[in-house]
Structures are given as C-alpha cells and as structure tokens.
Length: 286
Image (cartoon, rainbow, N blue to C red; front, side, top):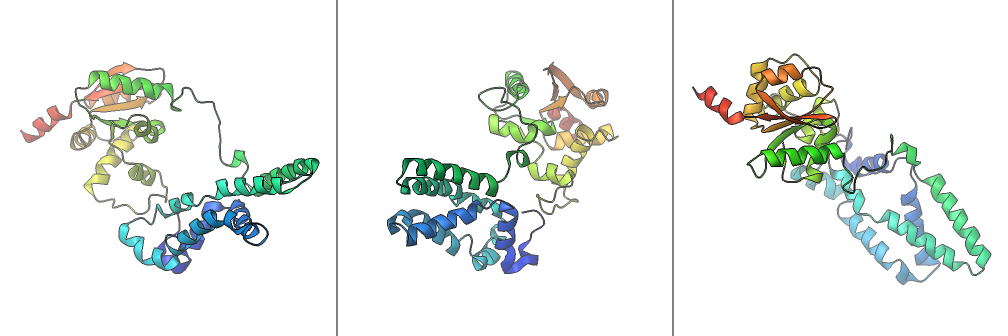
C-alpha cells in the first residue's frame, strides 16, 4: 500500500494499512458490533460463520507477526491491502441489519428500524461521490469503451499471432486485458504507475532495461516528449511490440509514422498502428 512499508512500520503495518483501506468508513465497526450482538444478545450459532472466519483471518493474514516475516519474503507488500477484501464486512453488515429489523415484533417498528439502519449506513459509509467521479453509463454489456472492442477486433483481424503484443493508450491499458486476455500488454501496470509518479507501484529499478525501454515508449506516446526516433524504434523492437493504439488527438503522429509504425485503421477516438519489429530486429543484426 502506498506510503506504508513493513520495514518502517514494523508490527504496526497491518493497523496502518487497515486505517488507510477503510478511511472514514465505519462498516468494519458495524460488522464487529453485529458479531458481538449475535454472541451475547441472540443465538450464538448466528455468529458462528462470521466469527470463525474473522478469528481465522486474525490469526493468519491479519496477524502482525505473520505479516512482518512472511509477506516481504513473498514480495506481496504493495498488494497486502487486498487481504482486506476477503473479510465479509459488507455481507455481514447487511445480514445483521436484516436480523435487527426482523427482531422487532411490531410492523411499524420494523419500518422505523429499517429507516434508522439505512440512516446509520448512510452516515457511517463513504459517499458515492467520494468514490466514483465522472460517472457515466456503460456503453455495452462488457463495461468497456466501444473503442476498445473495435481496436481489439481490428488487431485480431490483422494479426496472424495468437497473442500479439500491444502498446495501448493510458486510458485503455488497464482495461484491455480485462476485455481480451489474449492480448499481451507491452507497458506493465507498475511501470506506467511509476512513470506517472505514483507510489502505489513501490520502488522501481530505473536502470533496468525492462523499465528503460518501457519509459522510452511512454515518453513518446503518453507524454509526447522529443524522443529520438532511433531510440523509440529500438525500444519497440526490443519489447517485440506488434501494435500501438493511440489517441487521434496526439500531436506527434507524424513522428510515430517516421519511426516505422504503419497506421492500419482508425476508430472514432483511436488510431491503430502496426509495427514490424522483426524487420528492424534483422536490420540491427546487420
């Protein structure tokens, strides 16, 4: 998780990640209150599933000692916060809310209890506008832009490879593999985040050829910096890039074409380029 490291936080690492993950949302408190309510005020077997699950997680992946010595060895420190996803807080809160409503005998009492609990959840939760910005309805059942579907179809129709390697525009890079797993991304998620200044990706070896080649490509197609064409072409060749999908609005399309990228199709918002890296690989050998 960003700005939190086991080396600096030590045994407090789990707690700090927990604070950052939940923020101002108090659903975890409601979940634990529901377990206690079932244990002491209702039948104990109601809490058995949620309680057993929670205790097991506290002894393993939420155990500060376990995390301190095991997580760094498996290189999972940046992704550790994902363990909080497996705690069934939301289903638990919903379950206990329903049990509370049905615990009230009077019909109107049930209505008032439901309204009161809805109010509690609204106050203790996270407002939607704090999570989702620029909300728009999905363009299709796949929940991805129509442009992405179109460019994937274009690439597969043009390519003879089963899994072509593609440089996608930043807005499509994280979605492409979710829609079409047969495509290989040239620009790795962590490299893209690191180049953008994010700390989520952790540390990066800037001197490694793996990162330097990707950075050259990003400098050219994401940041439109004056990268030397020979250097850009070399990076495309070394990363075995087959296609590039770039916005129509880029100002350096001429330079990209001069580097050896051939435009083969265009959608409403993107241009699809083909790059014959095998040809330049042979030229580099000569």
